[in-house]
Length: 311
Image: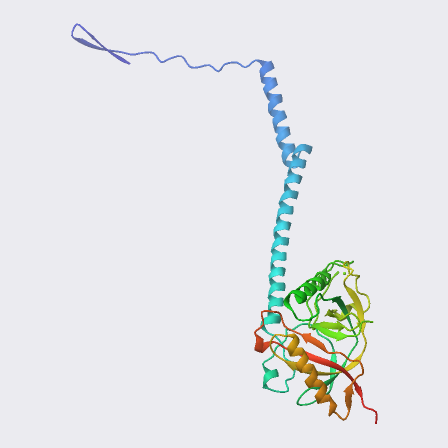
């Protein structure tokens, strides 16, 4: 509807509505083609839901595998971290919460040793100055120490490292195991797998060559089936059952200390009515503690092989 103003006359004229829009005819071929396309798309869509195409299946399977692998690795890493932390805490506890031998006096009461495997023995008799032990057989890994003294820092460190390498993997089995105590340093006549370190470490003096030897006690679970060392300077030897007289002392071991305590123990055994020093016996020193142990808490032992006196 429009407004017209002519000769001062207002007229209202109706405007006819526009013609209705007619839908455009779609050619039959186009309609058919579109229908086919729609049907084809519907078919593809249906197939995609119910049965993925090989390409989709491969991609999905590969993705799922990678996700599973990542989750498995993360879980394994977490498990390994927890296991490492547990092992570290367990090893630390062996030194933080050590064990003690039955003390004969106040001095020995202050001494501690790590809670590690050690040589098995039975106390036959205890006295004020020493005790008599029956020691079970055990195996050692030993090496000759450089120099003419058994307790200088350089020689002891070098020998210790050689034996530690054998103990912790420089052997035919390459297997790591727990530490044991003590380290043995002894005067005696001369004659690989990572494993538990035992105590004591033994140092022996080879009388025919005027050399000292250091020994690591081997874990008892191996028995004679020890791996062979890769270092030719390391030798495996079985120590037979023996009876020994033992006295303990604190502090750091020196050559002078060993000489004095060796003589003192021999003098004390001169008055023993049951046991005497075995002919040819040489002193053996057992050190139970790591270097960071306070001197008054350290336990060292002097031992001499003895035998019963003839009645």
